Image 1 (cartoon, one colour):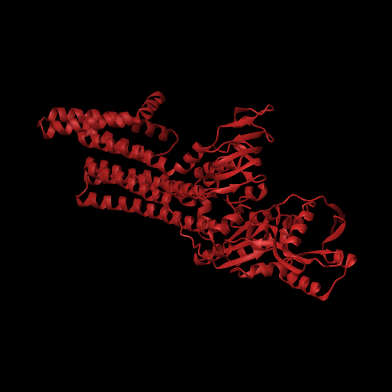
Image 2: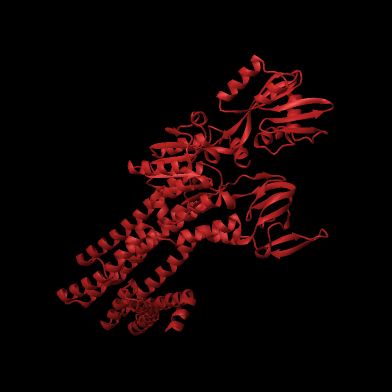
Length: 633
């Protein structure tokens, strides 16, 4: 029996084509040649060929104590054979086979996102040899630290860091962004992206399944195999519904004494569209998210996401870019360009985050500089015999002097939430104050405004920084509540407290310290550049650090669940109308089966609309260039 099943599965298309030709010959012999016997014989052959795979599947389901759709159709077709309705049996089995074929084709289309991702997964890489040559090797056998050569037009085969060269990368497969990213030495690159211009030498960080691209594929595959609450409910419903139809058919047959009507009840009662409608919406919705840099970890997550009415944000690395940048330069004495050049060259000698922020202001190679580090205060540098001081207020006070203008400038920038670095020479003929702080993400205001428009009632910021700093960041955003000096346990407790008030809370974070809050939230959203712990406990992963994707995720979840409900309604309404038509005398077995199979195609096509779903985002408040620069830092 198994061999026969495998044969029909393997040659499904060919068998459908054969039955189609036989059906056309049968109809031709009847209407053109007016020959009834060939017509009946051909219909019998079509019916027998068509019912074999259906009966085999029905037997398999009965063995596991499940009365499936195939059981109903098998009984209906066998009944049609008994009463001599060979044409009805042939048409019903042909329609069933056609519906199964169309379902398979269209479901492949809905799974195109994961299929496309899998096809884009790199398989080989050009590994640099000690003599400068290259050798093509399988990516699964490449170890961290291995150097890879990538040429224009090639796919990046591993996750790694650029050690030589520069170029423009198409990163759409990772983050859904169509614009090219300019990558230079020191920048990280990801497997699956494409080098559109330039030549790169990359030092491998991860390869194969361990890459970001590999993990995305794994998460999407797992998500598409999970079942939503609606799908589980329908599966339970169909478990009892199908036997109920069989009982109703028997009762109708006993009452009407009409075997054909009873058989037709079994055919029309098949819940095919009901069973396929929800999975096709789920697969299409998750696939759309994956193509746009949003990984839903299961269809159940979508149902939770659409209910979100409060979002709590971690501050550092989520609402802000996550690393300090120079926000203000106040020149009190001396030439601006000269001071910036000297300060940047001195700070190149330090690995402190504040020093690195200033060092980036000028990329010229450093002169010969003698630097002394004063612990907790800053640097004292000697250039061409002259001393320069670069550090906090105490360093300047101890080595030069603190005047009122300098003190006023320091206080002013501090009140704006900046960390302060003062630059001065011994006589303060060169004097400047650098204000440094973690910058707000340029797309943050657009993203949060969009969330408000989508119906999120409450936006909250939770920060480990002091309340004053947190308040200053939140002042630029449509944030409803701000909390500072919060430990990881405090954030988790806040989420629980809001849930007790009746809010459906989402938490967005990127660090290990966010894990307790993420674990407690109704929907946990992790920024893709965050820690593995944050990503592991999350329900949704934003592959790129773009907060606009949060509103996209909510909007997509709402559309997906709505699409599921539409498919459920279409399926139930079709069965209801078919039964009304049957008992009113307007629907027969073959025509009813046609409508039934057509309804399956309708719900599949309806679900496929989600593949093309796009959210219109408002970009006018900040330029695309600003956003791209910030996101690629």
